[in-house]
Length: 155
Image (cartoon, rainbow, N blue to C red):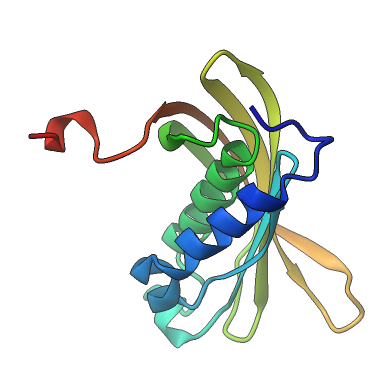
């Protein structure tokens, strides 16, 4: 199992390749900033397509960012021949985001036990000075399962 202290270059490369090959992330304009040592950072620049009826960033965008960042953080410290599955995701919405905001999700593994991982994170928007404003906070519980399709899809 990779540990937060070993750098995890191979794991980082594998995650970057899998991220690039996942159509959903490109569809929503998500970019992978970093994923190593039990931490991950992802970004989306908010556009009109990310907004709800009221013209602010939809909570589902925050949820997608957090689920991905928290899951990627866990993947960096779980066994390399496993996949990650979210069992529980809790998101608290703190402030609205707007078109043009750079949404940055940070996730970090808070604890683990066997194949279970608890992670915490937040979505912030950065202004021109680099100062952040928290838009959402999240927590997840995930587990490392065997790689390949989920059990219900296996032949």
